[in-house]
Amino acid sequence: MNNAYCGMVAIVGRPNVGKSTLLNKILGQKISITSRKPQTTRHRIMGIDTEDNKQAIYVDTPGLHKDEKRAINRMMNRAASSSLGDVGLVLFVVEGTRWTEEDELVLDKIKHAFVPCWLVINKTDKIKDKDELLPHFKVLVEKYKFEKIIPVSAKQGTAVEELRREIFQTLPESEHYFPEDYITDRSQRFMAAEIIREKLMRFTGDELPYSVTVEIEQFKMAENGVFQINGLILVERDSQKPMIIGKGGAQLKRIGVEARQDMENLFDTKVFLELWVKVKSNWSDDDRALRSLGYDD
Ligand code: GDP
Ligand code: K
Ligand code: MG
Image 1 (tube, rainbow, N blue to C red):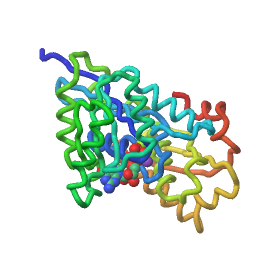
Image 2: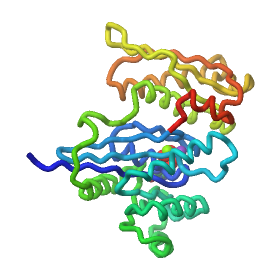
Image 3: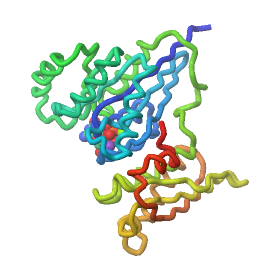
Image 4: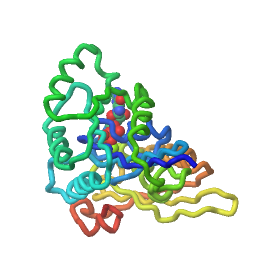
């Protein structure tokens, strides 16, 4: 028998640098939702990449938020920070040649975690003049003793497979934590809710990110193998309903169609999806309400 290798890799960085996009590209499957909005990833989620005797377990995190006044931001920050506990490697993702106060905040956490850290410079496809990268490298190496600095484009896949290979090489000898056919630690029910939320994040205006959440009221398999999924979209105010439903229900329909397609891809089966929109007041400022919705990790 070959020896087994297994380890945890945390993907950290400020909101919107492309952490979830990178994870999906590494896995070759979409398990972590992405959008151009900063609060897209609200929960810690593991992505499991098994090849032969090697298993890399990636932990995707919400980005750290500066504003801790809102309960939801505190929850997200807790999820982001606690993920550094059991990991053997940190991928610190930054965006191109941009360096902000929020990147600095994340780097501070990494420094205190005493875990080897690779700096991943994402969105290199957006850098028109590649000569800009070199001077930026010099700024970054001053900041911390990164073990490696790796430019990638998560969106286009540039250098992602190479990164994946290098990560496999660093895994410590250990039994695998998960069976080889697992791609995430999360349930199908959780994934269904996240997929619906992704479509909401993508198709609605900038007013909505904080105030929408999704509950799966029913998730069952019919005798013919079709998944019957009922999703409840919760908003804070009546006035937000039309922003989701759209003219004549067109937008809710589009959300439903695209969510169903993603679910069918991920679950590898036919899905029958029904969606409702309901008002639930002030959930994002209420710790207890958040916990009842599963925001407790
Ligand atoms: P996260 O908040 O760090 O998880 O970021 P996401 O993965 O949700 O990505 C944020 C936005 O950046 C999305 O609109 C992505 O499509 C985009 N994005 C991610 N990676 C890349 C990349 O390599 N190049 C470009 N141009 N956009 C990217
Ligand atoms: K995002
Ligand atoms: Mg994310």
